[in-house]
Image 1 (spheres, rainbow, N blue to C red):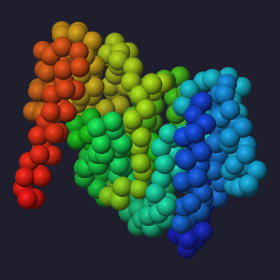
Image 2: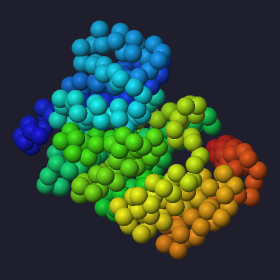
Image 3: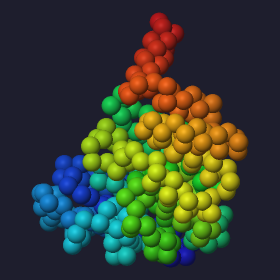
Length: 323
């Protein structure tokens, strides 16, 4: 990577993996094109879509030379598509953007603003930077919070205990580090968390910016691998990665992820076991305990209805106070 004297000339490759999302990928690409700090290139990796998605990207690329299309020979998942983009990237830095998310115009400008201080603090180029995100849900917009700046606690504890808002579409890191680590292209779920743990193994230091420059669209549930409920698969992943985590981080994953999915699937034994591991390590909040127990006790859809009532009650209280 260029020396500190050349910080202003650091180049960025944006990598957008996509599978059969012609409409949303257009918005994602456009948000990358409209950056106040333009990227060197926008590499769109089509994961063997069987619809008009590649044609949409080709049409945009015909008008914008910085947009480049790569097409996978077969559908292999988001991790493999990102790896394809990583290995082809020409920029000094890599920024990821999912095809159903988008950026605000100053996203890259704000990211690059902090790069000199991060490099001085770390003393090497094993760092990763994320920014806060705005989440669009069917119930409205959320702005997940958390600590910012240098994340000094282990990244697994930040993710699984503090619910830190690290999301792939907000991530930027040195291209050399991304090529060293890569995504596990055999995973269909937890690709982002797995990647963060792999970065941790390389002594990567994490920073988080408070500006919510990434918009994560969680309104589209159909087709999302994150919507799959399978606590047994989560346990298999945990068994393989538990050595990468601290005891508290490991317990936090069991409590915040495994226990919840087990409860939704009515696997009470696993749900209570996961909760117990979290409580023993003080790795779970009282709110999360209540939420998991509610999944066990209430019928299907009951938790969502309770949460909606709570949101409406809170909104009514705010309206009353403002009168």
